[in-house]
Amino acid sequence: MTETANGTNETQGSHFWHMSFLTQNAIGLSAQERNGHWTPTPGMSRFDAMNEIRRQVVEVSPYLADSVMLSFDIQPNQL
Image 1 (cartoon, rainbow, N blue to C red):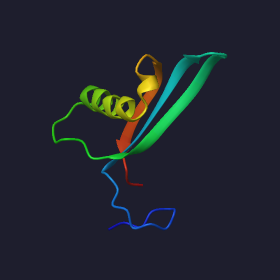
Image 2: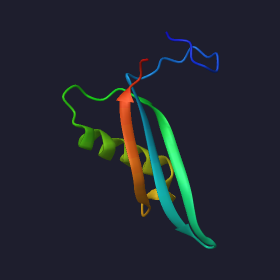
Image 3: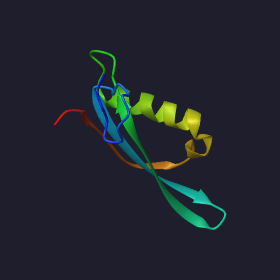
Image 4: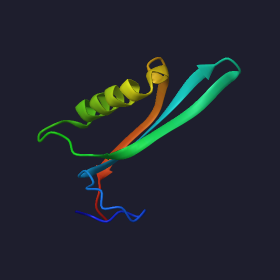
């Protein structure tokens, strides 16, 4: 197990990812961001990873289904 910055013993995925979205709501536009760690399937492309992570994000936050993704990044979760 790896100790995280917040002191927990949560095992982290092999990659860190970040997505930002632009959504429309009753009062205008709203910027949203999501991030986390994840271990992709061996041989998975960045494009496949982006689509799978977005699917998981929308599953948890359905209102992001019609949003515009402004950015996506995934990198090895090791310094």
